[in-house]
Image (tube, rainbow, N blue to C red; front, side, top):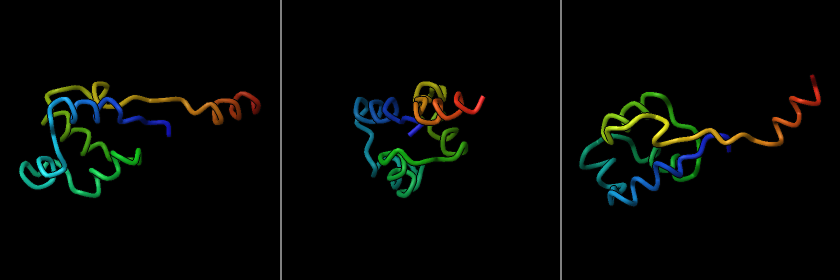
Length: 79
């Protein structure tokens, strides 16, 4: 999983932001997006923008790129 949402999940926990808050009360994201974040699946840039606006932060504050060693190794062997 090249993109990690661990920083975002930590913010949710620290600020006690729940699924209900984001999906129903404040309507920032949908339930499917909430699930994707928790499962480490892809979310689109509009979602990242909405979350950054809501949390008053930058994308790097909520996600990070984690290199996949398998892909890096394959790319090096092809060069």
